[in-house]
Each structure stands twice: as structure tokens, then as C-alpha cells.
Amino acid sequence: MARAGYVFIGLVHILIGVIALRIDRGQGGQADQSGAIGSIASKPGGPLLLWAGSGACGALALWMVSEAFLEARIEADSKKKMQKAGAAAGKAVVFGFLAFIFAVFASGGSKNSSQSATDFTAKLMAAPAGVVLLVAVGLAIVAVGVFYAYRGISRKFMEDLQDPGNARTAVEWIGTIGYAAKGVVLAVVGVLIIIAAATADPSKSSGLDGGLKTLGSQPYGGFLLAAIAAGLICYGAYSMARARYGKF
Image (tube, rainbow, N blue to C red; front, side, top):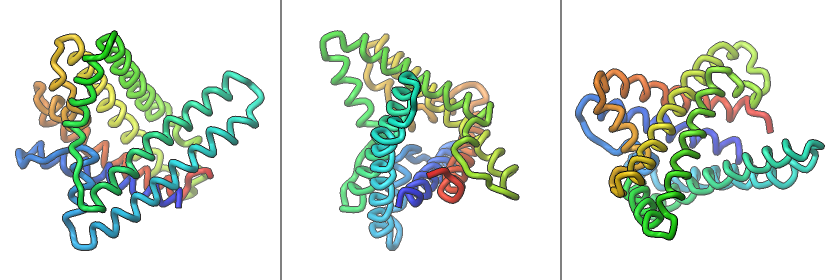
């Protein structure tokens, strides 16, 4: 079930990339998790597929919880133990949230990720020391983006896989491009949060969709958005390969 979770994560990233390419051609759309999952819901048999996605991503989240509590315990070095536990716990939250979005759309509901990001920014901004917290969140997301790009360029992600055999070269290439592209997008999302905090304008923090559209609005943005969209599709393909070759 956990392996199947990577298949659905891959599907979501591929659809986000496809929607981003449509935006690049001026066709509009919401290039984030909600837009991708919503496009599945509108297809025949979509709700059934979404329930399967919710179960698979939920199983992957539970697997990461077990990694946080069990795998980290066998690490002798206390610093590495905390790092492993923290990384696994963070992944569990991300995969659990994705399972929740799948379930919302499967049950006939809807969710706007961009609006949710803006609302979260506004609430945090209104809290005591909210601006400082918001900047810290933005910097943390930028750091995650840099980490993703580093893992892609250094090909450290291959450590998460068993030997793919004849598929090794293809997996390395799609993983390298995919991780780098996702790193860039996450860094842009983090920067938008920091800008929202600095200008006291929550609407500037608009999540993944806003980050991609911001890239598209830059000089030569059409080419940049197309490249990032292709990279996200590569990341989706890598995630599906991880379902087959990932170490569990």
C-alpha cells in the first residue's frame, strides 16, 4: 500500500506539470495539488480512483510514522537519530495531508490550495510575532527547496532506491531533473511567503500555483515555466519508479 502511495504522488506531480504547461499556453488552470486532484475527480471513475489514492497516501504516511519511531531507534549516533526521525515525521505530515485532500475530493468536496495558503498566511500574520514566524516558515521552505535541488544535482536520491538495473540511467536523469525543478518551485513559494510578510499582504502567498505563475510572469517566463513544468513531470515519473525500486 505504501508503495502505491508513490504512484499517486507521481500522478499528482505529472498532472501539475501538465496544468502548468496549459497555463504557459494561456489556457488557464490551477497548477497545484487541488487542481491536479480535482481534474481526476471530474473523470469517469474518478472518485473511486481518489479513494484508492487516499488509502495509498495514508498508508505511506503511516509507514513514515513507523520510520520515525522505529528506524531512527537503531541509529547509534543521536544527531543522526534526530535527523532521521524528523525527516520521516515531516514526510508523514505531507503524505497525510495529501491523503486528506484525496479524501475531500473523493467525497464530493473541494479545496483551494492557493486560498488555503493565503488564509494560513493571514492568520499567522495576525498572531503575536506572526510576521517573524511567517518569515521563519518562508526561510524553512526555501531551505527545503535548496535541499531538493542539492539532492537532485548530487543524485543523492539514488540512495533511496534498490538497484534499478537497466533502468538506472533513465531513473537518474528523471530524478535529477525532477528534484531540481521541485527545488526551484519550493524556493519560489518560500520567497513569496517572505514577501507577503514583508509587505503585510497575505494574497502574495498563494502556494504552489502562485509560485508557478510567478515564474511564468518573469522575463522569459514562458520558457522558464515550460522547463519547470517538464521537470515536475519528470519528478512524477521518478516517484512512480520509486514505487517499484524504493527501499522499504
